[in-house]
Amino acid sequence: MKKHLLLIISLLFSLSIFCQQREVINLWSGIPLYLTDTVNHEMSELGSDNIVRVSNVSYPTLEYWKPEKPNGTAVIICPGGGYIRLAITSEGEYVAKWFAERGVSAFILKYRLPNDSRMERKEIVPLSDAQQAINYLRSNADQYKIDINRIGIMGFSAGGHLAASASVHFNDSYIGTEMKYSLRPDFSILIYPVITMQNDFTHKGSKKALIGENANDSLERYFSNELNVTDKTPPTFIMHASDDKAVPVENSIRYYESLKKKNVSSALFIFQNGGHGFTMKNKFVDDQWFFLLEKWLTENEFL
Image (cartoon, helix red, strand yellow):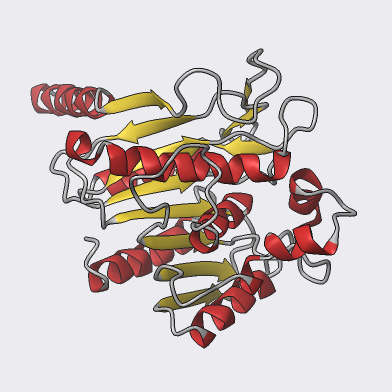
């Protein structure tokens, strides 16, 4: 009994230490760029599936999960939610902890969600937050013991679209300041990502929220990331399930094909079963893709 009590106390103490290593960073100094309504409308809701979802984000943040022994690699994590909400726990905290345990400095990006009534140029606002996050980490690399050449971006579902957008549009700055550092991520991790805005395989909810159902061809092509891959697009890890009913697997296949055409180092893994949003829901699939991701990160010298 005494041994069990000591073990519980030890575990609680370890958990307390780990929780103390989390820090919330305001992404922008003052009022964020493109914001026209300065009232904070943010809402947080705990679903019946025990997943916390955040909506109406006006003031984006980075939540820093500090590893015990930083290895120099950092990853910016973009939760999904159809550009309407953010699944902060299942597609943020769940993976940030996994990274921190392996020495990677993990930063959950609570990015703004497109809203015509509260911001101008709503379609580039999430991308501006992702670019600002990359810029912030490179500008403060010494503080966080980060190698400026080992900063990656990760995204789930619509967050995967955002991560892919940051990986192809890094030469188009939306942060409103003269850049000292490149906005190009050094690697990209896309989990059941929305990639295209073209109607055949897009996720219609994400398209409607980001650019509108009847967006012009130019805007549709700009945010169809498979059409914007270059030989400078960073090395990419992609994971999807064939039976995904929300975001067709063709999104990942098309992006992978574009990467291969440009000779970008990339890996695509497709599960037969898993559905959409399988993090925290399917332990078997999670064990498999975490194993594959760890192998890929190690092979590319980010772990």
